[in-house]
Image 1 (cartoon, rainbow, N blue to C red):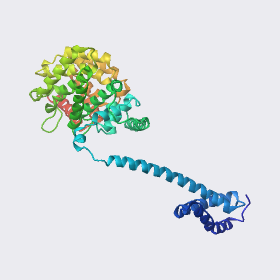
Image 2: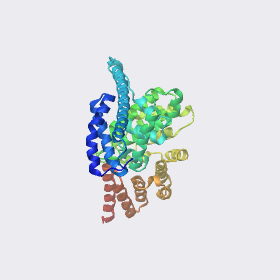
Image 3: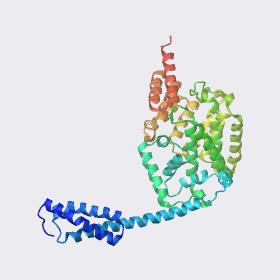
Image 4: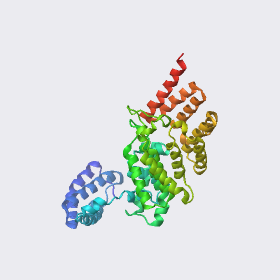
Length: 419
């Protein structure tokens, strides 16, 4: 390299060399437009480097070499693009072939998608989250609430799940028997969460999202048809039917929430209750009992009580004792505390809730405060119950639940001030 005579000399030299370099590049590569772009990149490189490093001994050769490298990069990119276009064209030709409309209409790929999202390449939690997005149509915030994790954490989990699915090259086909066995637990949990979000929406102005609960039941029916001898599949379907049977009684004229103890049980769907009980009766003797079968049995005890006061709470508590040992879910522990209070008194239930205060998964969750408020009311501690109802109301993102909790707090306040 030799030192140039300043910035002005370099600029003049570049203007003189530009057409020479362009001619050489066009002659070699036969693409005028691309050659212009390549020469411009070479000139820009010279403007940046020559004032700092000095003008090369053969500036024309330097520019041609840089421009040639730019053209080589461009050609490689074009070759790759054309290959992609050729492959895409072949795929488009295949897609453009005549379609058997009847066959396509009759085929439902939802279960294939469901198992695909629960592929072993993903962790269980990521598979469930991805399926809730792809099959259930839930928002990231709704899924985060279902998992008791921050929304940002769930967004990252879903993004990683999509990348893992893409990288694994999972084919869009129904799983083999072995794959199905490996993925079944995650698939059932997905359906369970989708149903729960439909039965009690975690956010918004509506208490229920019928589209989600009905879709979950439809998919559970399809799973039961596929695996009629699987006890947990039958148990999950039974649980959904026994729970959904109460749908019509859960809201009042103004769409306000009506708790189980105050529902008009004549509005319950007896057909769904009968179907759920029949499924449960048929599956319980077949072998080991799973969590969904136990939850279905609890729902059946509630549904078979003609009045709230007729509920067999000792039987429900016994079932929750079994379920608690089987599952570490804090919501199970929460429900176990309610059953304990109904059998052994509110103080016993409140004592169990104290342990949940240390469970980070329930931190900031409104249900813990709502249950505590209910048990405090049972114990006669109205001031503290009012405070807990209000805390719970401030934490829920469901408007019907918030209104119900605030109404309960106002009702107790009135009872305190009333002479």
